[in-house]
Amino acid sequence: MADFEALSRQHGVSVSAVQVLARAVRQGGGRMAQFSHPELGGMGQWSAGGMTQVGDMFDAALRDKVAALCAALAEQAPGQDPEPPAASAHPGPDAQWWPAALGRPSASGGQNGLRYACFPDARRVAVEQSGVVTLYDSGAHRITGVSQAQGDGRTLTFASQLGTVRAEDLPVAG
Image (tube, rainbow, N blue to C red; front, top):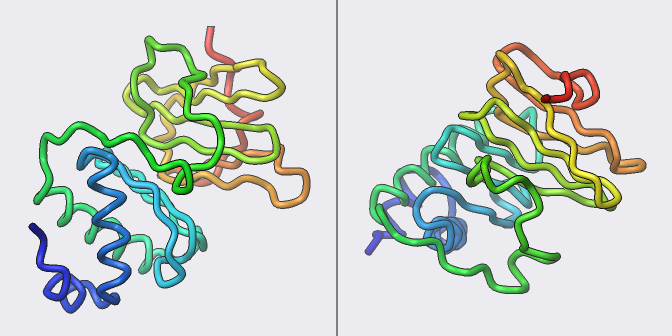
């Protein structure tokens, strides 16, 4: 069992923020987390594969703090099977919509009728819009963040070690 107060002091966040992340990491089987807490930048995602997203994608210090805290919590919950998410925690359909051969994504999300899922080991990004799934080859891009346009919500931009790249600028995978 995690010592929430010690982790709170160590990472400089409230006990409430630690509890929210602990629950999310536990639900993700110690490998991923999807959370929402104002102190953590609002909605965010973390995966053990190295992807962390916070509400302000340019706040590297917050992103690093969340990643370190999630990693510490995951060490205390290794090998767990993911718990099914509560309906209120993850709205929308939770059915797998990407090709099963890609396995489990390091991150997924969506809004306004557009969904994405990232598969760094396969170097693929799946995008579903209006029931049509398109697979993109991420090539040398190691995707670490995703941004979806606020206006129409139909433009995806990915952050990688090579900079930002739009989904439509990636080649369609064969």
